Length: 189
Image (cartoon, rainbow, N blue to C red; front, side):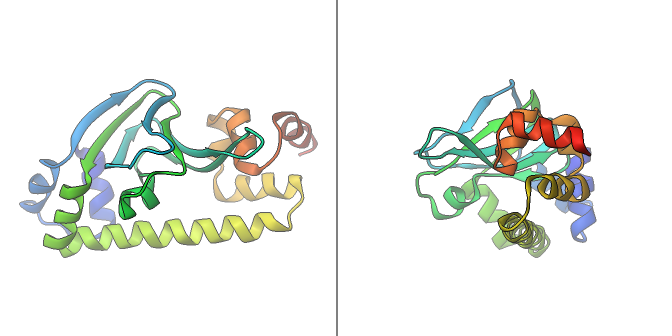
């Protein structure tokens, strides 16, 4: 159950074999169904998740009632409604299990306890924040001036699994276009 988490942690910092079981005791296994809500708009996010199997999706609803996907996380990655989790304010996003998933969840108090106690765990968290920020900036600035077909090319280059694994409706919401537009543009590639 913890092998993937162990690999994830060891790829990012130097953990000794005594520290890892200490970390594992704070993570609880959760199995979710497709579209199961982990955090809803208006709720305060209380958990951080490591994805053993499956996919999590974070999205909001715009003022026209459309879903706008901000992020997908697949196996061997971590995810939370991070703004709500850190600030302990009501979330502006939905965090859902996009597929049936096997997750390891850690609550906020334990998460920040590990950050305080273990410099290695803090390093993993810092790397997550840095990568999330860079990804967000790349996506925002890249998408601002891009045509629809260039957005798809960007996803093919930076996140190729999304086009083969995620529903086209969800990918379209991530790219800021309709599902039919996505289908037409994909046919041109």
